[in-house]
Length: 625
Ligand SMILES: Nc1ncnc2c1ncn2[C@@H]1O[C@H](COP(=O)(O)OP(=O)(O)OP(=O)(O)O)[C@@H](O)[C@H]1O
Image (cartoon, rainbow, N blue to C red; front, side, top):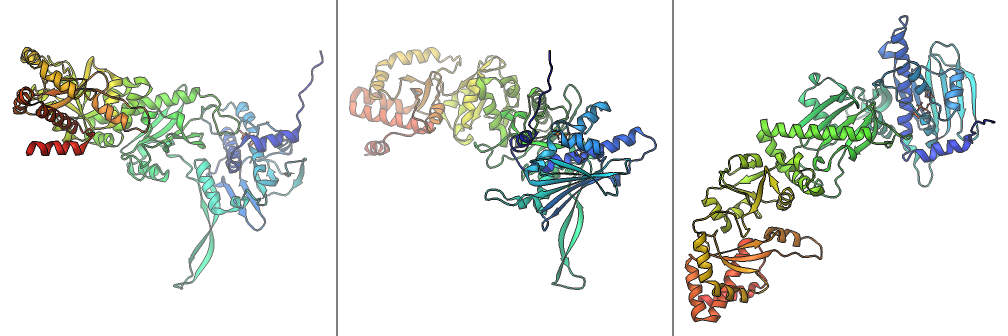
C-alpha cells in the first residue's frame, strides 16, 4: 500500500487563516503581543532551569512603536528569539506552533502562562499589514536573521545585524480603503485602547512612547511637545493577587475601571479555585440597577480571560439569567479555545465554572441576608424583581435556589420579611400564606378584603411588583404551605359565623340572584361576605386568575385578554345592606341603581376601571337628589 502525505496549498491556507478565522482585525496586536510574552516566558523558564543564568526583570519587556510617517508598526520583544531553522519552521509552516512544542518538551504544567498553541496567530499580522518583516536573534546565538513576506507569494530569510537577542516585528500597515481605516493601527490612542482591552494582564511590561504637552520652562502660555515612555498594561491582574493584599478600595477601583457601573458595588466575591477546572474570578454585586437593566438591551455576562488574555467581553454563558446583575471577570487556563481564540470550542469547562459561580453567588446572597440584613434590603430593592423573575422562569425550575432569597412587605411587621420568617411564626391553625396584591403598600393596607385576616391576627404579605403573584403561582407552596390571595372567595378561615353566613345566604338568595341578573356577565355571582367588617362591598375571585393578574395581563400589548371570575361580596351587616333590601322589596329602579353603584365601588376599590364613569357619577347624583 502506498502512503502519501497530504499536500496543502500554502497560499490558499494563508488566505483562509488571514481572512476567515478572525472576525476582528484589531486582534492581530493581541496575537503578536501574546507571542512576545511567550518568547520572554521561554527565557524565564531557561533561567529557572539553568543556574548559570539570571533573569533580571527590568531587561524583559515588549515595546510597541508606531511610525505614522513611514506607516510602520513595530512590536519589539526581548524574548528568546529564533534561530534560522526556527524561523523557517515556525513562520514558514502554517499551524506549526513552536510554543506548543516548547510546552510539551519542557513538560510545563497547567497554570504556566504560555499562550500559543495553534500556530496561526502570527499570520493575523496580514490582516493589517501588506508586508511583515521579522528581525530576530536567538538567545545564546551570535547571528541574527531577517524573515520577510508579503503574505501572498513567498517568504525570504537572510542574515542581518541585531545587537541583542529578541525579536522585532515590523508591520507595513496597509493603505486605507473605502471601508477600512488602517490609520487607526498607527494611532497612539487607539493602540493603547487595544492593548488595554486584550493584553492588559500580560505579565511583562508593554511599553509605548507617548506624545505629551507641557508648559515651557518659565512660560505661562507657551507649550512644548515631548515624548515619554509609559507602561500601558496593568500586568498583574487583580484576581491573581492575594486577597489579603487587596483593600476594599482596590476592588472598587477595578469596578470603576472596568465600567461595571457608576454605583459602588455592594459586595465583591474573589474566587481562586483549583480543581478539575481551575479558575480565578472577581464578581461584583452592584448596589443599583443600571438604567437598562430591566430592558431587552441589557447584556448580561462576565468578562472571560484565558491566561490573562481577554477572550470575550460579557460572556453570557457564565451567568444564569436570574443573577444577570452580577458583573466581573473569570480567568481560566483550562478553557478549550477555538483557533481564533474568539469563541470556545465545547463548553464543558464553561458549564462547570458557570455552575460553580451560580452557587457562590447564591451563598454570598444568603450570607448577606443572614448577617447584613440592611445591605441585603438595599440589594433587594434593586434586584429583588430579577430574583422573582427567576422563580417564575423555566416553569419554576429554579425555585429551590431562590425561594429563601425572596422578601415581601409584611402587614404585621411593617417591614420586609422572608418566607421562612413568615412560615415560622404562623399560628398552628393557619392553613395558608396570605398575600394581597396592589399598586402600593398604602393602597393594599386599605383593602377591605384584608380586614378579616388581620382580625384573626394573621400576617399578610403585600405584593406590589407585577411579577409577584406570577412567581408565587409558579412556586405553588413554600415549606408545604400554599399561598392564598386575600381576594380569593374562599380564604380557608374556619369561622363561627360560617353557619350564620349560610343562613344569610339562604335568606337573601332571591336578592343576590336579582343582583346577579342586573350585573350579568360582569360578575360570576353575588354572595354574602365572610371577610368584610366595616366596608359594604368588595370583589373576590373564583378560580386561578386573580383580579390583580387580570389587570397585569390585560395591560400587556397583546390581543388576548383574560378575565378573572369575579364575585361581588356584600357585607350584610352593613347599614347599606338594609337600604338595599328595602329597595329590593319596594322599588326595583332604586334596587338597580344601588346594585350598579355598589358594583362600581367594588371596582374602584380594586383599582379597576369602571366602564362608564359618567353613568356612575349620574347615578350618585340621582341618589343625592
Ligand atoms: N516574538 C516571537 N519570538 C519568538 N518566537 C516567536 C515569536 N513569534 C512567533 N514565534 C514562534 O512562532 C510560532 C508560531 O507563532 P504563531 O503566533 O503563528 O502561533 P502560536 O503562538 O504558537 O499559536 P497561536 O496560533 O495559538 O497563537 C510560535 O509558536 C513561536 O515558536
